[in-house]
Image (cartoon, rainbow, N blue to C red):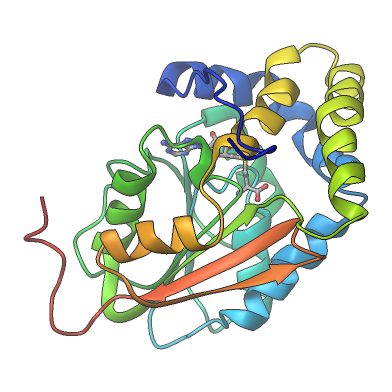
Length: 248
Ligand SMILES: C[S@@+](CC[C@H](N)C(=O)[O-])C[C@H]1O[C@@H](n2cnc3c(N)ncnc32)[C@H](O)[C@@H]1O
């Protein structure tokens, strides 16, 4: 088994995930920026350049949390893009709604059962969220379902850098230092920041996630490593000759 793929038991039960994010919601943004040394802002900005806003249709950001990627698309769209943000954790959605100050709608919704008709959005994105959805393929299929034929589905996610000497340093930071800082700043959630390294370690990366894109019916899937492979942006296109409605 590869060094970064331990067989860890992970509780991705919806109510556990909701409770975990509800617990850290008040300090989520602070923790995010602190633990990533603010690089997370760059990753979201870069996402809006690699998968640019397309004002010919609406944009959906799922597992939006406090809405940073949705807001990045709103800024990138310069007022011409209609962005909708969804997440199933109400306290995260509440903070996103407050931050957005009416610029875009936030809805409480499960990514496994999005409350939208098929083929509604031009672009559907998720940042650091698909990893937490209990069934990766089902989540991606649901994102693809609500995407228009010819539209794009994009996933920004952590990956483990391959390059020496960054890789051993990263693994040490991610497994040892990050949970300590997470526990200290959040004041509570051991689970959230021990869960984070464990969930990254067991989530499919690069070719493996691209294969799941294909299984979800998306085509022309590609990915780009960001910051030496600490994060990766994947994106694929929904084919124009099918709506994915018929898929099991
Ligand atoms: C690590 S946060 C990412 C938030 C945000 N996208 C960002 O970039 O900071 C993961 C989010 O996914 C949400 N989430 C996990 N599973 C979900 C599901 N099945 N449906 C909707 N939201 C989900 C959690 O509530 C949490 O807000």
